[in-house]
Length: 416
Image 1 (tube, rainbow, N blue to C red):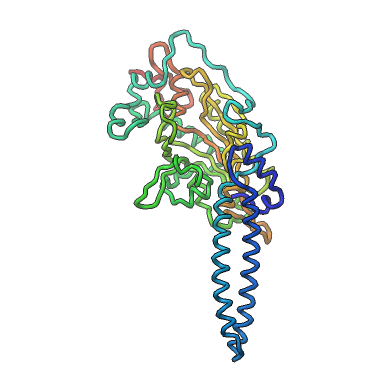
Image 2: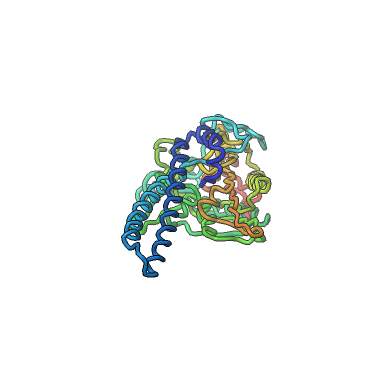
């Protein structure tokens, strides 16, 4: 949720952010509703004060019963008016995007992202390269036909060395960030609506979210939801900050509107597993910027440990989500696509989630909304696409990256 005081005092900045993010929200109507709501509150407070005065006179044996009754009726009308204004105001507020960092470039989609740096050199093959799906099917690493009969399109089962490789890369990522001071967490993945609203996924991403209507619950698309929601409606001590979590969870996305897009293989699927980094820190842009680049560095370190060529790009305004102030995307080289493709996303939210989730900390006598950040440590099976394709051999085998071999019981090459 955006700070209403910021919208009141600097509406043009909020309008610019909405336009840059391609978000349609009427800021002028919001400001007008805010004024009406405040006037209605003042009027209601005045009526209640008058009623209190009149009621004391009635209680003391004085006259005024009819006036008190009339005031009570007027108060009920004023309360309804206030609720209506506040309800519409809250609806509009939930649609207002966060402001953007000054360095974020203007643009519509990922083609307008600003490349920051590259690491590693894409491999040149002296044999006909194969895509990950062909390799994994041939090596018994994945089963598609069985799962798609009972679970539908984009379903899959990792089998044998495919399952072991996923567990290996997830554990490697978890060990990497835990060594940097992050606390491992396996949070709930079935949550109430408020958790998704509080983290900014609702109302905008409902069509992407699987619902369990009988229980009024939802499946999350990232453990960020549970990690942030663990501290909703809480007041932290300043000494607790920063809180750094590494969440391990299955994730679910409907991929609504993506029919036919990246439908081959394991790049875009409905169920995946992720290690997600989340930070809750002081409400200080300098602090959260430092945390942002720390998270980004962790993701890059994991890819460098895997010896996977990748690039880092600053997301343009049109690629920056509702609650994001700054976002970097990390794209890993995938030979079959002959391109870098997104595998990680690193975001600073400022106090957007802190306000929506009501996460505060004490600083002296003040209670301050916390800043939050998030970044993928690793997501599978998408990372498997990059590993299998970059480490394939001419004979159809796949070399196991050296850092993953301890997690694969020393296995060096996946073969038939």
